[in-house]
Length: 362
Image (cartoon, rainbow, N blue to C red; front, top):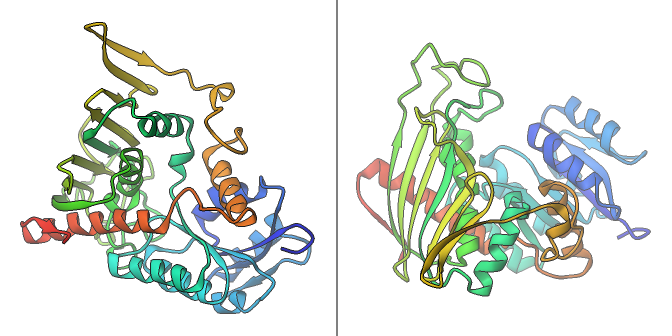
């Protein structure tokens, strides 16, 4: 830190950086954004002018940014295929790293990131900001308290009706590693595993579908897609059995003929109670031999369970907790070992879909 400020460099200045990371970091008083990098150097230059310090630098090659020894933290906001090697290089260069989700394009690359963080002693977190929502934080708190009992069945929801992202590299399998499963399914699965506090998968079965590629009446929120570029699945589904016998059903889609549209949500069923996020956070159970359903009021005034900057949006809370984890030398909310398990399961679902067979994790 210089003059009480954490100096941050951002690699990748596209949509996720502008929509989430830049404004999130800007909301943290202890942060200075001092360096920006993008393969389209004009984007880095524009970001430096809008979000950076007066003397902020911009680069085309990320290794030039990493060579700056005054940078404390790096945020990796690039396409999935480059998450691993940029993160490892940044850790080896002595930087703490926040990497955008998903952790990596496959579990082997994710493991390299975990090992690099351990080897260097630097902090590594993955951008699962949905943990920072009021409903997620409340649900995690009551799960840890034991209110739901042993959670043995869960659903991870990531369903859009017609919202295929047609910009950037989202439709390119070789750069992203997949479609909605790795893009939005990863958020729902992370939220589910985290609230259950269960990171020991035994096996999974998965299916993927690519049914909408050549349809011409798309009704897509982002405009029509180019069939030649649409090389990833439009929906994917997984059935995961954990070592303790718990079951998780994961559903993900960018395009699906359904009215049950839910994204970055979880449903939990335990021995004492259950919870879902339909229209808000609902808790269900039995009391005095009668069934009940509670709807939780989640105004800002009711988040005493959140330690830190209780206000703000999830991306602001994510940035605050991450930066203060560095300042106070404590764990970030998202541990790399947890994100690694998410990547393992996603990879297992894709592999099962290809082979038609279950994938065992041990």
